[in-house]
Image (tube, rainbow, N blue to C red; front, side, top):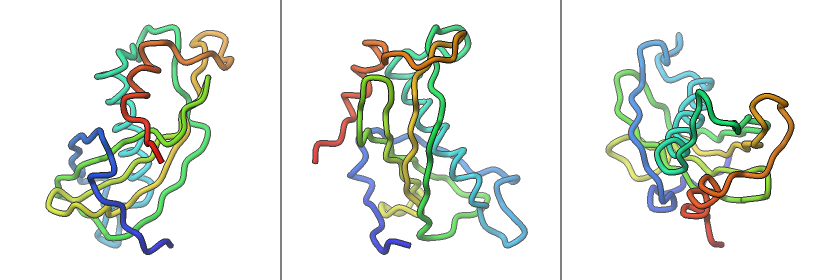
Length: 145
């Protein structure tokens, strides 16, 4: 596990998330699978709010093809969280998001990772170029090394 805990300031888009009763596991903390749900919710919220992604009827959808998470500190229900999102890599048909989950009162990540969306035609399920409106939104949070 890496020792570096990313800071909230490294993520240009931040949205609030709350833990749910069902997120806790038998050990009294948020189970690892919930973090992937937080990642997916935060990235898609950004796409809906800023990229005008029509999740119900749009011609293009994003499918997650890769994900990874590093855990630094436990979270539990009930707890208010923040999810930070940035774009680490932007291709013609795919985007790699850097995402981190932060307790409401801490600017250091409790967990961070990435996941990759490949954009596909809704019907054919074949890769397709990222539409201009989505691309512009993604470029607005593109990490500049």
